[in-house]
Figure 1 (tube, rainbow, N blue to C red):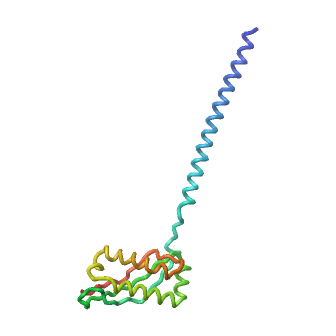
Figure 2 (cartoon, rainbow, N blue to C red):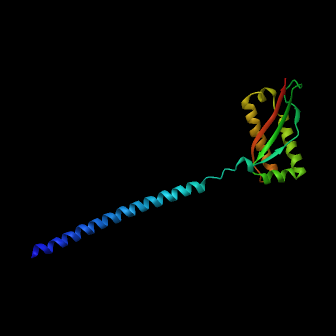
Figure 3 (tube, rainbow, N blue to C red):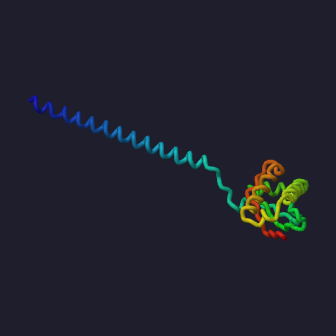
Amino acid sequence: MSTPELQPVAGKARGKGLMILLLVVGLAGGGGGAYWWVSRTAGVAAAPREIPLSERGLVPFEPFMVNLADGAGNRFLKVNLQLVLEDARSAEKVLTTPVVVSRMRSEILELLTEQTAGALVTPEGKSALKTAIADRLEPVLSGGKVVDVLFSEFVVQF
């Protein structure tokens, strides 16, 4: 009789061990899944939202024609450019405020007259000019951000 009593006790121990093993595996899987979910959504929340081109604002200007800072004095630049602003509301605000447009044009003119023909004919020179224009206009925009400077005409006379 003692033998039949031992078999159910051994079965209970094996069932209890299996239950603990399943519990540990379930908790580990749940913890791993929770970590994956949180890290995935945290990465998405931390990334800034890329604004589509259709929502960006464009500020066009009349063409600029300036004498360059070369010593010869007979070199000039004719450039037509547009500014791409972070959003359409910023562009609309700029375009409806004549003083801001005039200040922006003045800042661009001052910057262009500081350039030399030799620097502007290289791709690096044009890229540096785009960066300089964007940086120079940030204080004038008071909250807006220049995302890009687009040249539609760029002529340097030697």
